[in-house]
Each structure stands twice: as structure tokens, then as C-alpha cells.
Length: 227
Image 1 (spheres, helix red, strand yellow):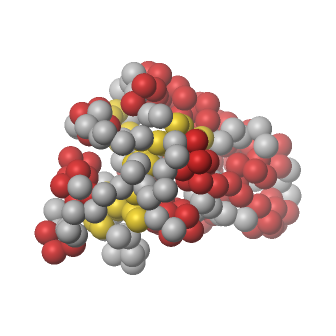
Image 2 (cartoon, one colour):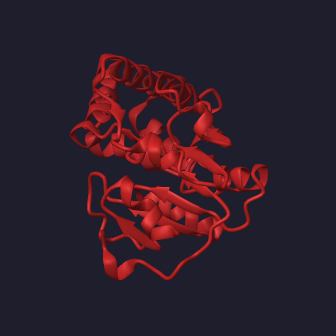
């Protein structure tokens, strides 16, 4: 843990978690498994996607950026959506086969808070619900926000770093000063947009270019930082 960054006692009235990279250890080979599926499925359809293209699909917060990508490849929205559903289904299989597991102490950490706990994940709603049910985590959260793929434009524009899901959790759980726990720039950005503090869990990457409120190396350090 980064002792120099631990603040004086700060009281938060809620905690909002990301799923992948924080609770769910899904970063197999740096998430390259998902990018490979995108590239391979596109190739099966006769399209050439690069790794950079695959990252754009994951990280774009503007639907217009993906429209430009689709137009440059001659690909339709339906075809891109079909590829994303393939990634979704592959993730379910990885969970079922034990390749994606919970981080150690995840349940213990989630159950240790005496304030409302929310989940805001960019994982599609179908996958998130499956993971929560499969690992018995549904009751750990007072509010879960995950976006369905069927309205692809809204899925892109409302996922983090948009504050959309965080604001919904704050409204549903009457949180005025929660903290966001995540592992990526989208989590830190969403927290900043919502005007709340963030904790960056460095599960896979250093992310030294990011500016979260706090940093920890693993999930078990969360409470010592924010309480």
C-alpha cells in the first residue's frame, strides 16, 4: 500500500465498485483474450480489425467514433454488435470453466461495509448478472448498474467514463459522498465526472498516468485507505 497517500479519516456514505479487475479477476493476458475474439470474429466476417481497432471498441465513449470505425471497415452496427455478443458469451464460458475467478478476499471486503454498496460495470448487463449469480454476489450490492448491449448507442455513451451509472447508484441509494473503486481510466474518469473520490486498484497495470484520489495494490487494502 502507498502509505504516503493514506489520508486522514474520511467518511463516505457509500462505496461503488467496478467489477472486472477489482472483484472479478478477468484480466487474463491483459484482457488480450477479448481483443483476439474481436479480431478473429471480424476476420471470419471478412473484415480486418487491428488490435488498435479492438481497443477503440472497448474504450470509445462517443458512438460517432465507432461509427467512423465501422464506416472505414465497411461494417454494419449489427455485425459489430454480433462480435461484442461473441465476447460476452466467451466471458461466460471462461467463468464456467474456472479461467475467470474472484479476487482473493472479494466477498469478505464487500461484506465489510456498513454503508450502501453499489456496482457500476462496463461489462454488458447479461455478463454482469451471470457473474454475480454464479459467484453468489447479488446480495452484496444494494444497486447494480450494467448496460444492455441491445441499444448499442446508449451502451457506448452511458458506460464509464460517463457518470451515468454512478449517478443512478447515488440516486437509488441516497449517496451524497460515495467513493468509486476501480482499476482503469474509465473508473477514475467517471468518478471525476460525478464529483466524487476514487481509489485505483492496481490489479494489472501501474497506470501512473492516472490521477485517482488514492491508490492500492490489492483489494484487501481498500478499507484502510477510505476509513
